[in-house]
Length: 258
Image (cartoon, rainbow, N blue to C red; front, side, top):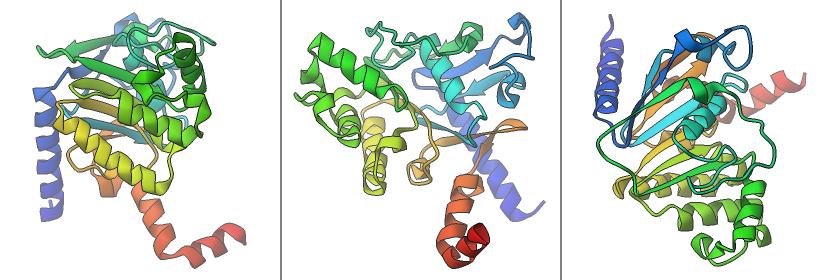
């Protein structure tokens, strides 16, 4: 075993130790014995069919992986199992534009700590328009910057929600927040994550952004055909591919466009 490998193992062990401490959610357990069939979606997903328990970091847990590996599906299931509306919002939101969420939440057990969050929000890029519409209907724009989210660009509305609605001392579940944000706003998102962490918050974030997942005091769970594993930032495909492209842009373009 090399010194580098040993160091990585120690770091991963430390991450798992922190996860055991918990903040609001300590872990998510999958009741496999109750699943009627692993041949149907979402139970047929490799990351799901191999799942037993996921321990969460007390501050930030990133769910990363290729499209279709199940990270957003699991985040959605965690959100619903924790009491949030499937299309996003707080626990008080109860609307449905279209029931598209899976049944996975029915087979999850949320292991909580003794602490209870004061605030909470489930933010989904996919259904943000529906959420903004509901906020207008409820006339609660004062909690989102005193301006209708529909009167702003997608990115501005998304950012206004992060800055105004997330109050701290909360549990925040974010599904691909980079979808609405420019690179500079993604860097600002890292700072916002840190502010919320300092305000005694816990975040679980599904993302493809190598900028956002660079937040240091976090655990990265990588979803793949082999299941789910804890990885270091530099081990993620997102980091490696982006770095390779930026360093060897001409060579990469020649290969892609030949």
